[in-house]
Image (cartoon, rainbow, N blue to C red):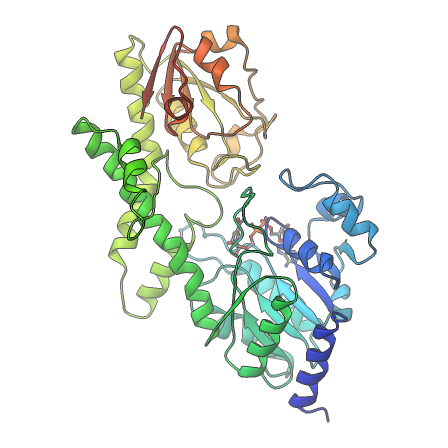
Length: 448
Ligand SMILES: NC(=O)c1ccc[n+]([C@@H]2O[C@H](COP(=O)([O-])OP(=O)(O)OC[C@H]3O[C@@H](n4cnc5c(N)ncnc54)[C@H](O)[C@@H]3O)[C@@H](O)[C@H]2O)c1
């Protein structure tokens, strides 16, 4: 019988020589860049994804993610070290399995680990002594040990004895050109020292810095702490925006000046609300778990509430500004500029822009949108009825026909000078026009 030390030593050697075969389960925003980074560092990688269309596109060398360098996927496929598959049997050849599946909220806005459970059940069928399994999906502290581990152990293998189990949160910032998977320090945690050593060694092969922590739950909590910090600060700056406006103070100028303090302050900027896969979700996971263990996080809950209501507040503000300009919101024509949840990404998940659009239409406005990343509105979970609409052209004539242009997302590749030239009323949630020094030629810009 093979003992744990020999399993550990064998995998350690294979990782050090980059001979270990790696599988990522999930090839989405997180799993695909990770799989490519691992393969670019010399490991053989097979990505497993249930989405057969995505698998086919990846294997055909398509770019797949808009902010990837043009040939990143095709180069990886051509190297012979990377391929994608929908067949779980590929896990049989893996030494290291990285789980990067979604962890959304349920319909009742509670943590939904169904994808992790399903991925775990699939892996359990192929699990063999000596495997290293790493969960990267965002989960609540305790989930890897109490939800995933029992599923993996169901066929008799034991974590820390027969296979190795670790958690390493994904800290990817899609669209951020300054930080890549390689340069973002990687938190690695496990409940036994061999799993911790192996996960640390593995990520050290391709990230510049690893940060080992003492347990699975600590590593899980790090991710939630980071995102909850953002949630609270975004809610705070949006609250300041409203209060300071009433005081006749421009919060953007305040944040810019405050950010010159070299210590004790970190700038957060106002906006139409929060979106994406992480910031709206992580605080729910943290707060839910706090209640589960008899504690509470009222500050996090309040920040969430503020952020959830931000699109409604913004829609109300649009109605007021339209009224000031002599147009009723009912029947007004509004162009929403940018529907992605943040600038320069092709991602509308939880985007506040869509919530604002929906709310304005409920109030009787007629809305179009323009977004260079979305010629056609995709199907979204929260606003499926908007799918199929087409991005409106940004011509002088079209712009002049709107009662208001609402800047919801400040993509770089939009001609804001043209908007300044032709729009009648610009409602700017991102301070684009002031920051660029663009003055409207015939209308007005209002920061909201
Ligand atoms: N997107 C981000 O910026 C980001 C950043 C940090 C952390 N995260 C976290 O990373 C995790 C993954 O997020 P994402 O944005 O990559 O999600 P995603 O929706 O982009 O991709 C998930 C992929 O997993 C596939 N999948 C689902 N179940 C599967 C299964 N059982 N087997 C194989 N494939 C399966 C889906 O088809 C999809 O392609 C989540 O927990 C998320 O919270 C995301």
